[in-house]
Amino acid sequence: KFEQCILQFEDAYFYNHFGFNPVSIGKAFVENVKAKKVIRGGSTLTQQVIRLSRKNKKRSYIEKFQELILATRLEFRLSKKAIFISYKEISKG
Image 1 (tube, rainbow, N blue to C red):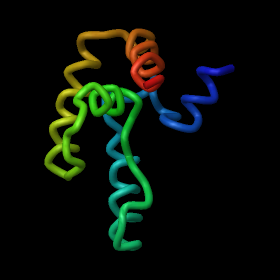
Image 2 (image 1 turned 30 degrees about the vertical axis):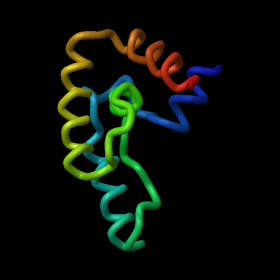
Image 3 (image 1 turned 135 degrees about the vertical axis):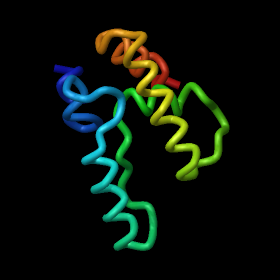
């Protein structure tokens, strides 16, 4: 149940994407532009693993793009189960 809760809240399409979700990124971008501030992220669990492992990086669109590329590469190297385990471990602190 824990996994289902995390996936529903953080990345409902985790098992259906290849490291990033273009639909979620697009929706987040549109909502943020309309609000004129960041109100929604579009990151997948895989992208969050990358971001959290690259401590102290600035939050910018360029950085987000780099994370997207690294997330795609991670998806080719690890199983979804291994990525999820990494997310649980890295998000603990």
